[in-house]
Length: 413
Image 1 (spheres, one colour):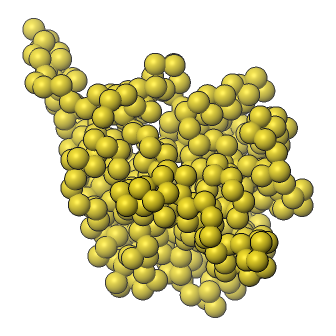
Image 2: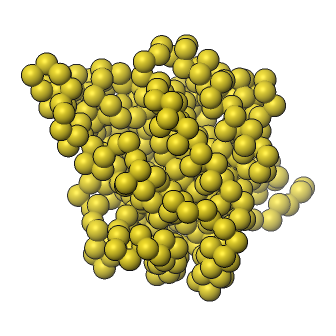
Image 3: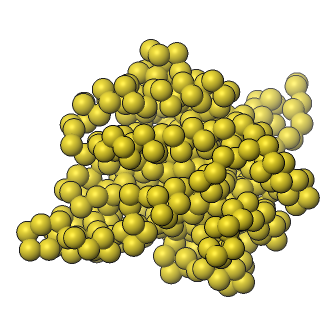
């Protein structure tokens, strides 16, 4: 009888630096941008996390979307108004060595298919600069959205993806990087009645877009950075998504994870359904899109009218909600990833993303224990899942000992 030793594997813990956008005051980091990275590396050490996902964004003076119109925090921890040259790279690498904190990838979350040609070029150029920075710092990936041209149909957006986004994948290939796409549908990104404003929002779309990328020799660059909060937002559950990818032969597509949850408000669903508030939101005034950018944040009522983001560990343990796909079953999430996806678990980033509104605090000392608790919770959940998987699927299997019970099943709730 073969005996397999117990050797659990755990994912690479990380935290997105947008969790605290203003760790370094603007008046300090604007003239000395890499101070923001140094400060976050030190903060990560204090949080007992081994890696960060470095948040990049156009500087507030350069962006086309005013901060007051945004639902979720954006942080230009990585400031690329000036080139990230060798001296900047040496400084950041020295800080990484000193703090013993690594970087899983760079996250730049913007609309790469925007209909404005000038803005689109600016965003693409910025993403290429982010890719160069990733290479300089020894990372293997960048992370972001695909986006959508709101003036075109979905089929026309697929054509635009081939024309406009594939060159970004080619830039990633030239640099030996993956472009990991997060699947948020971004319903409130604009005050139109469109709900899907990021075309890479569901597995059917991932597969279609991957086929386009593959046709141009960049299929290996197109990967998904999966966030279960967006699945909950769309009425999906993680296990079924992963099973579908395996059934279709695309379970290699997911290469990283954001650990952010979603808690569905049953009253909100009763009022508006899963399309969210469709009218009288406040983003339109007197029959026209409001000229006040601060009013545009009301477009997010397409989403927040029936749910709220969860920071892992802050939502009640709710088995019924797990089965109804109304909040994330974190343990099954981590088990399903191991059971159904093709992963190098030890090299897979597990990135805590903080967007829980009541705890979105811009005070380091107040936020520190909250983030530290969430990171510890996430780490323990992943460790529990890793141990369960190793025991059941390796140790017991090698000795032909059956696993007890049935467990959660895909396509069923």
